Image (cartoon, rainbow, N blue to C red; front, side, top):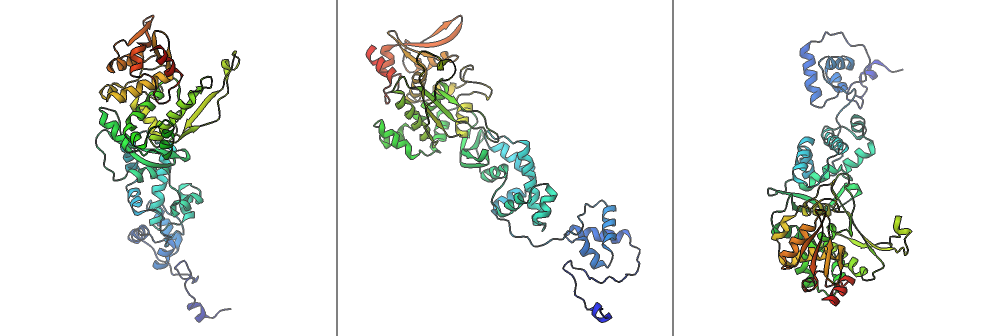
Length: 449
């Protein structure tokens, strides 16, 4: 049993108010008192702290704050939180608010898909930073936002951020010319990780724009290793980089270039190339396409052979196919959408490309594009070379004519442009087939020519 003097000398509790439980004298509180409490609460003081300072019951403070429309959290008090493990530059971005960040990434990033879930994560992250600055702890932030506390802890430590926050941090304060946007060369974790940002035009109006895109990429070491197989020096590869870009673009249009679909968060594609094993020279052709992708910093390698399926499986001589596959990249999606001019719901086999810009490019750039189409969809006969490129036969004919091939013409059936034909002598002079791989088509054409 404690004495009266001991009770008077008891220390204050951790909550910042006296533990004296003796009955306090009754006092009628007015609106001016409540207004003072509201101001104090907005400064970050908890209801318990306000009640202790004013020497009133905390229930009274809570009732008045509720009556005045203040959203309260009983017992909350600001405490010193560990510092955020994210750069100050990112903190400054987040303080702009989620709506401004959303507008920033939509205006500056090509092929970005701001999903509803992504927007919700962005809003929660901005609110988390705001609450952290007010001294609110992990547990209470998690409860307030409806987010698991382990996620909040990672946010605080800077271990992870929502993908829209990362995108915003990558493009924040970067200047762009009108008609240009940013895209990451590679992504991972479903688009949550983005690396190697480059500038790309939203539409191509000149060859220099294409060069600008290419020069921002860096060839992989495998580019030069593969080039050595075709006796192409490193110095020559540097000069040929635009041509290799064009060849890859042509393969994407040809039937041999199979493209992966759109991905959540970012427009992204991969190349899946399959060539029959009936023609051994297709091995060299597939490796050449890999070199073209490697030239842009995109990994592409040979995979396990594709076994016959469907009708082919039950044919007279079912043959497996060589197969190569690239990593997913928004740059490949940009080449499909802006380079070829196709929408996401369109395909290379049923829709015409929109790429008149290619007629203003150098001779060798156009030649490599045509070579890719011929290596993919060309046939050789005594007449010459036929390239089947439905529904883009007229474009192929115009390209061959722009390269001086006067015998090039479009073959129509029932009013439909089906294929392009050109005499063997002119086709061999270009040459219309890749002279580095010297595939079976190339060899057969040389015999006729």
